[in-house]
Image 1: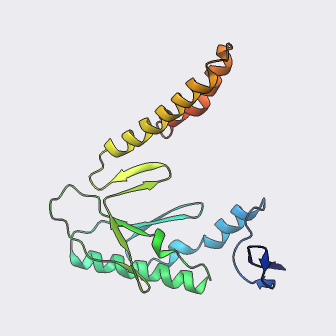
Image 2: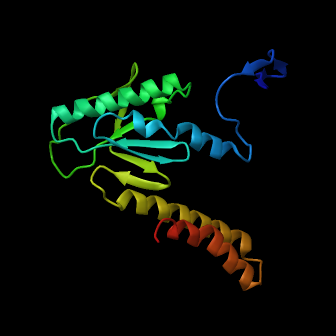
Image 3: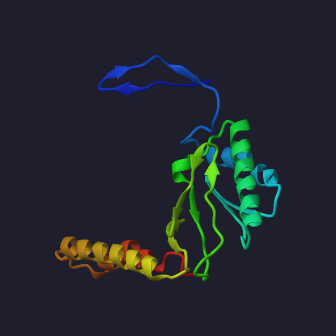
Length: 185
């Protein structure tokens, strides 16, 4: 039996029971969540595909006609129905539409999750990788190099007094090279 309350400026509400969801911070929480959402792909009646990673869900399909777009919308609606029936509401503000194409005028439409219109974007970060509508790596490379340079500058300023090159090398590998090499192998 779990319960929760809200505390703001030292004033606490009454405890209320938590009747759904997966406990956060527990050792078995991620496993319970994966088991809980395991049936989600079965609720996609059309030819859309799903990709699940932890609590991240992607729905995608090739769309070359308005009919394909309508099928994708039906699948989004099916996902929304699943979430309502499972008491696992999707956060529509975190749901985005990214059309990946080389066409100048692709077939597109507006999509919605329940009553919320989904935001159309030209790039989106997915598991730390910047994906763009034209699959260019420029935005991702710029972001990674920027982060790595900031970390390198921080290490240079804070480790200049350290004479032990082994410590500097370990810090470089942990904080700079790891940024540069993420998802490259």
